[in-house]
Length: 90
Image (tube, rainbow, N blue to C red; front, side, top):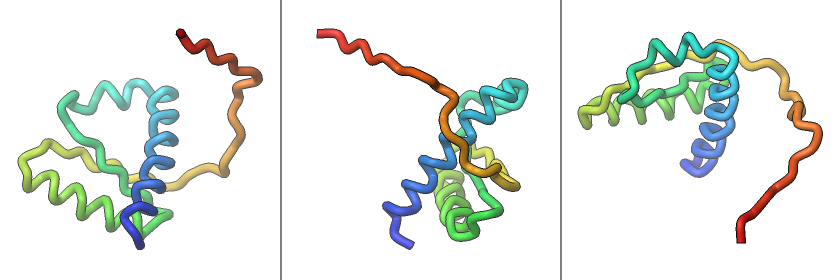
C-alpha cells in the first residue's frame, strides 16, 4: 500500500485516538511527555504492520516510543457540533 494512503489512515486513526484521550484523560497521564505514540489497529493489519515498522525505526533512532494497541473501532458517527462559526482575524 502506498505511503500516502497509510498517512491518511494514520491521520484518521489519530483523530479517533484523540477523542478517546478526551474521554479518558487518565490514560494520557500515564504516557511520558517525550514519547511518540505508535497506534497499532487490530482491524487494519496493513496499517498495523506499517506502524510497527515505523515505530521500530524511531526506536533505533533513539526516540522513546509507546505502542498503543487499538482493539476495535465503533461505527463512524457524525460530529455532535450543531453549528460552527469561523472568526478569521484580518
